[in-house]
Length: 429
Image 1 (cartoon, rainbow, N blue to C red):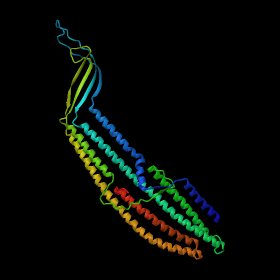
Image 2 (image 1 turned 120 degrees about the vertical axis):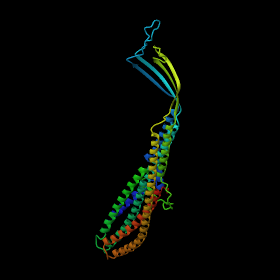
Image 3 (image 1 turned 135 degrees about the horizontal axis):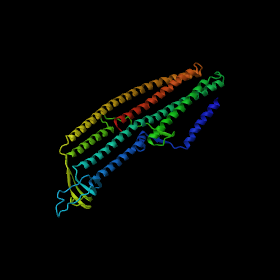
Image 4 (image 1 turned 180 degrees about the vertical axis):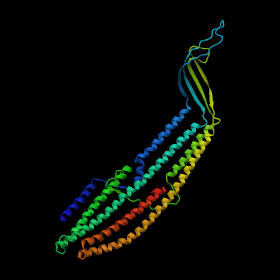
């Protein structure tokens, strides 16, 4: 039995050593993961799409300043044409009009003054791009909360693995001591089987913990694009506990509210252009029958050039109503901003209370560990003396290990709570 255990441990150690020889150790920070997600996550391509959309919109609007050329063709037949009452007079021959009319024309129109509508639409395109940027930034920022969970999931697995290894070492040492006593006839045969079963259970825990670590690491790798494997080391944030100024929220959502209000201002500016006249020059060159000469009945060509103006003097207050609707939207955005600030303050307060709770738990952990270590040491001596059974010893040993793991877990949870507090407030690590 001892030989089997020794062989298993040897294979386990050599396997880890062999893997380490061919793999480079990499240390990654939480900020590294945050930064990598900004470049890797598919949503970041929204920045480029928004920029391209704005560029195309600007080009399209600029085209309205250029001459607009249109080709028109028309053919028609009418049941009645103009007749002259003096067609029977001598020496006068009245023209005969055709019932079929044909005309093709090229129309060129050049905008001279548009009341600022095109300029306002260009400003709107810029405002929309800025708003899209802000919305994408918010989505990428919220991704950090998922990264934070996976990151500390890996760290928690590391702490659990460390404590399981300590338990495995203690059990192995105790197993060897009991086996020695059995060999010398001090303890009955089979006295170490309970310890050996616990060793195997601990090895199962190591397998499960490593699987959980690899799962969290894989999810983290998918979100960040970083190449993370079992040789990657994650380090807890060092500046997570730095003081945070109250009421100094820096969340990207505030940029969304600001850009949304700015977009509404641009929409009002565009609506105001409805009050101004539109002036343009035009040219028309045409060929057909009839032409401009009403007495000409054959095909002919002609041209027309001139200016045209449009000015809506009364539209039943449609522009005013549109502006009122925009003002209501702006007020809605302001309300949403106030609601967000209120919820953010509540969330920060809740997180700060969570931090205080974890601090108190850590203080109790220290007291519990001291007591559990004393009890475990006493149980170890009693087991060696045959006073208690292996099961009773294992119970106390597991309580000691669980107390240690509880302290380590709470320490990690405290760092995570501080890191999450920074995320909620919009602060960098």
